Image (tube, rainbow, N blue to C red):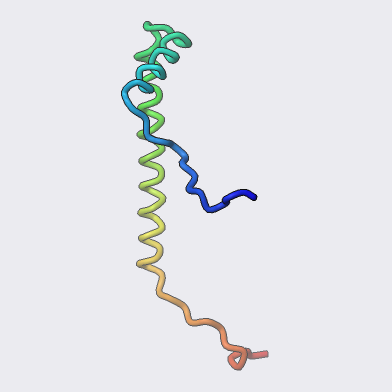
Length: 80
């Protein structure tokens, strides 16, 4: 009935026409005087998110490098 194998696009690509429409809507909502402040706040938020994700990725990589692999516990190795 439904094809569930279709790819799902989270952020589809858009052209300059769509960009102009989005910009016009943002200008209507915030106004031209508030637009630089909004853009700066969005830029800072994106930068903080990227830095946090990069730090988390580096921390995971460092943990994987420093922590030696452990062997699985075998049923015969139990000591009681």
